[in-house]
Length: 126
Image (cartoon, rainbow, N blue to C red; front, top):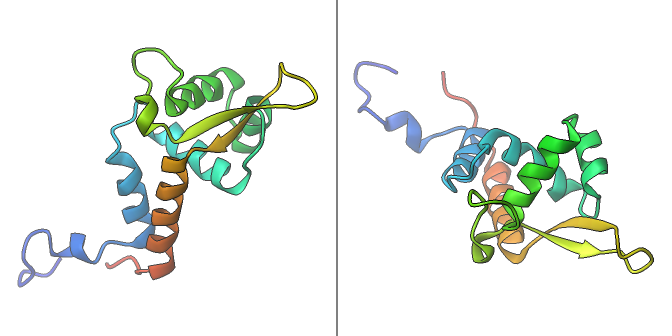
């Protein structure tokens, strides 16, 4: 930052990736880093089960399951309220034991917002 720049001036020209991450972090979800990673993978791969999602995200299944439950509003007291959930589960029509992770309406809205931010492609200012 130059000495002539006002404090916080760089924030207005924030890099698109940073802005997208800050958008997610503002949700105040527990395990925000893991949540961001899983959210982005679900955006690209809706309909995976938790084990498949863990595999593509290179995370442990237990961690993935915990974070997916938090983001779907189905976890413990740290879970998002159901009206703020980013994920929803859909049950397989062939095998009722199988659940697949999809974006909820709120998740689709966040995905669209993040896509708009990234489409702006603001460069990192040094």
